Amino acid sequence: MNSDSPQIITLDSLSRRNFLKRGSAAVAGTALLGALAPERFALGASSNDTIKIALIGCGGRGSGAANQALNTYSLGPVKLVAMADAHEDRLQSSLSNLQKTHADRVDVPKERQFIGFEAYKEAIAQCDVAILSTPPGFRPIHFEEAVRQGKNIFMEKPVASDAAGVRQVLAAAVEAKKKNLKIGVGLQRHHQDGYIETLKRIHDGAIGDVVSMNCYWNGSRPWQKKRSELEKQYGRPLTEMEYQLRNWYYFTWIGGDHIVEQHIHNIDVINWVKKGPPVKARAMGGREITTSPDDGEIYDHFACEFDYADGSTCYSYCRHQPNTWNSVSEHVVGTKGRSDVSGNKILGENQWRYKAENAKDPYQQEHDDLFKAIRENREYSEIDYGASSTMTAILGRMAAYSGKEIDYEAALNSKISIMPKSFAWDAAPLVQPGPDGYYPKAIPGKTVVL
Image 1 (cartoon, rainbow, N blue to C red):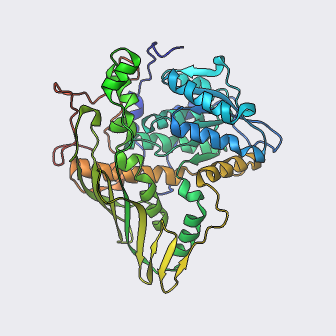
Image 2 (image 1 turned 90 degrees about the horizontal axis):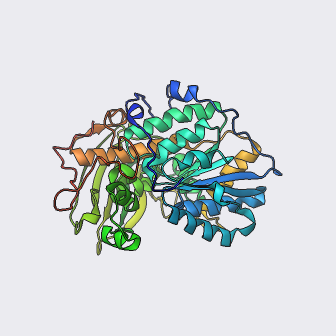
Image 3 (image 1 turned 90 degrees about the vertical axis):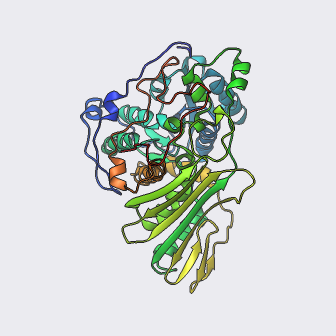
């Protein structure tokens, strides 16, 4: 298998599924997943068993997740045995770095290095734990396959880039529970002592009833892959699919836009405070600093209002604009005080501040917790908040793109899928550049999202 061979995955049937999910309510099972029962289910491993890991998506975050999974060796032996990526150069770079750090825990010979759009299936077949860390658009497809094969799973956030993908994840999660699979989701604040202690106090009433919330992910633009530089590097023109995959952050179908890909962390904390997702949202957003076609189609700023069932509202802001006010934080106001949640502080009648003593890296802790649950064969799933926080961020994007007030359930049941109809190097993404090379952007009042 090589990256020059087109490999097709048809998504038409997946995008037509109709599921409904609110909070942690049950999701109807699917005939598709039920018909694809694997030969065995992933069970717990004793402290002496070697847990075999497969890395699906070998970029920076995927390599970091694999490193953290391999660092759980104090709980019992672990080994990276397979890797998969659409691009061989990314796989080789990741493999080289992991071998330097974990020489005795990396065993990925050429026959277990899989390249291409369907490489994930072969890598998953080799493992006990699948690390799913490709760009978010692929997460539902890979998660469904890992569940089908009966594997324990760690998947990065967000868990999808559109509502159809969230529904796909929720359906697979029903089967995962039946198979006793352990599932971790990369929203690491849930494993960070300061957040855990702060949220406990908020839920215990330290600031009274929470009546208002603010959250932010304001900063500069992250990495960008320019088409001209990529084509110079590889010595040839790139197909549109290849270019969008290389520059994935700037295309909504694969990255979700930055409100979903990054701001999800802060939105997730607010949902954690409220013990569930909002009921509706209103939003504004747009593009103020587009300078080249490499900026893709995403917005560079969002301002959202999320209304919760108890009548409280979260005011959510994110932007990628240089030389502006920056903040990555969450804040809540209650009837007896307020909390700088990200600062792990309570202000008011019950003033308190978390004092970190030997605090563990939350990125490492989330893997320690997952692997411990696997070895103890305990029920373990983070899919409820992983999916609902993903959907909340998607709701905010949908409200901004359309300019409409949108209910959570209506958004979740949107019949619009933004995913390509098939995946191959010569397949066409739904969004294409215009004659000037620039990509069309969502226009409030005109863009249809439901």
